[in-house]
Image (cartoon, rainbow, N blue to C red; front, side, top):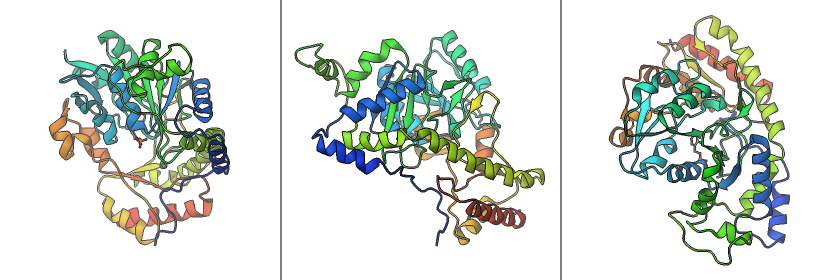
Length: 380
Ligand SMILES: *Cc1c(COP(=O)(O)O)cnc(C)c1O
């Protein structure tokens, strides 16, 4: 029996009230009052030109691939150590993910290996801000401008995080957020696209509304709406936006509480790190993170499955991810590794994520640390 779950969705208490309001307003389709509030919040907080809610981060990445005009054979540089949607969005347009190794400290795309992976077919770079900790964006942006590439940030995990004071997702041409139940700020399924380049704004609205200029029609800018270009239905209904608004209002408090939980693990695990049993996360000075995740990298030689089994036996929901995309069944066919990926291969096999959610108590965290400490002592 799992007594300390890996994740527990946090409700602020206002969700049902706002959903009732949307219900009473008789506005259930997308782009109503709650969607507009969420857009305004995201624009204000990130400084992006235009924020657009989507069904998921996956959908936002798919929109980004359309906006970036990705076509058959175009290559997109990304880490292999990421969620499948980072790659799928581009594969759907015929693009080929080119996997580059990650940095050992942050597990983010290694910016020093990007240039060697660029070919005449390269169209975009997709930095993934793992655990809500930023990639080295200054370097990535300067490589992109030198080679005329688009930058699409997979900031699924990075809501409220920043790099040198700038919100993640607001630095590249486009940025994608996730509000999935397993993220920090949630709406069940949900996401958002940050459109930072002004030249993408009107096309983004069109692609999100089935390829039509319906948004312009609703603003009274055209007297009927028509099919303008390829698109799909990427916008969520108002009930989802109402739920999300209750969360965005409390986003700073959620971040603060998660950070305090994160710090507690970080302090409590310092001793195991100094004894060489594991490595704790490393946060570069330029990055303000949102405590999306607490992970540890077990020392080489400690068997991860034995540790996970012991945590489970003691009622603790710890998990690992990702199977690197270059070694997954679809990744081998649909993408290619730019080179050897030694850091990805080594670190992906050593990582464990610990329970982290708003409301977990210090007593529960202490128990996680005690069980982990015992398990790494006997599993190696
Ligand atoms: C969660 C996640 C996604 C997908 O988010 P959805 O909202 O579930 O589509 C994409 N990329 C990364 C890095 C993620 O962590």
